[in-house]
Image (cartoon, rainbow, N blue to C red; front, side, top):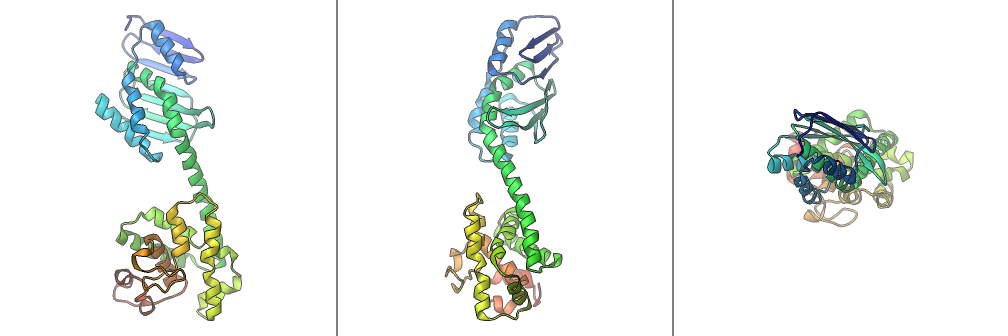
Length: 318
């Protein structure tokens, strides 16, 4: 590296302030890889190209949450540095100092996708290596960020739909809380993700939108005919028809389609025992107790005995 006194360089709207004592500031526009190499060549600055090896690790990830772990582990294993990585959906300007890197995520296709923030102790060669590699990082994670945003939008829309549907079904806040409590206890028993079970519970009955209001009143009162019960069960197929056109996870589709299956094979699709997805069992079990008001005796033989024992705990009421 060439020796120089304090140096200030502006290259394509990016300003570099490099000091003889080793401190530096970089701000302005996010530089391209060509900009970084031009700066390095003109002033004899080294670029730590080991940062490029992070590409191989990042290509293995499946969701946005893994980026933090991969980057932090890379700095620890390859450079011996403790780095904290955070992601913000808020846009920002490029701001780099020795102990803080605030880097906007700018995609040629999707625009500004938020900000990556790295906190640690960085040398100039490491920062230049990261900037030179940054286009590759953005190209890897931009699809994950977009999918994350779509998932958040979908969850928000489903929350709104869930509230609206359950108003039609005449379920109280207490009823909804009871259903969730039951489903989450079963999730813990089966080792399922509580967040995923909670999501499945909200979406599984989307088919209620196609049923008549007066039918819900009869179902909740317990005063319904066999034909009316058959009509009620149509929400399973109605919900599936709605959801299969949407980009929802498979466990959600299965919870919708199979939450009226019983382990003895007498459900509407004829699945039995282990053929029934666990998410569907958890959702169905909660629904039968709260909406259909099934007690211990009616649940026996239809659901696993450990479900019944867990929820009823020696009582006939959950």
